[in-house]
Length: 118
Image (cartoon, rainbow, N blue to C red; front, side, top):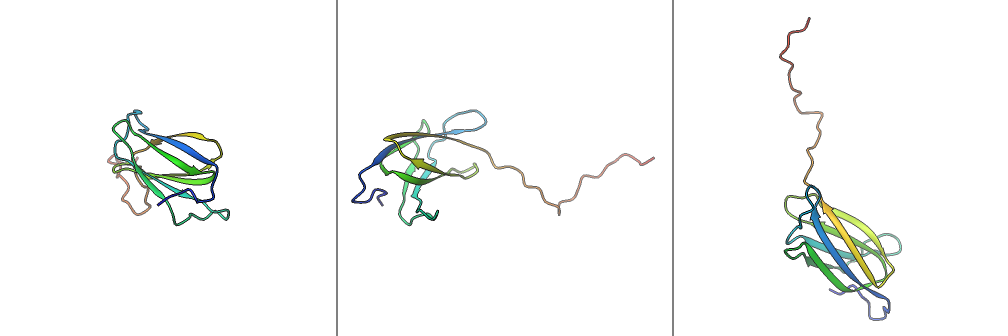
């Protein structure tokens, strides 16, 4: 699937660096998914999927100018997603992935206080 249309003249070279938020080490084999975003904010059907190398890097040449949705997925990390305005010939995007956070539930048992009440 190609992001650039046949009549598209302004295209950019994108560079991605994906690291772990807790220690800035690279994330290998993370999926970087690129989707153009239409003027009404909807994600277009076309898109491209990249994989990061051992240094957590991936690149794509030929991304059309305009709004681009970037999603990063990697096992053991929260999914990252953000829209970027692509309006320059070179764009570097750095993403720090976080580990999943514990979820709060009102239905979980609360820890019991072992101290006697006075």
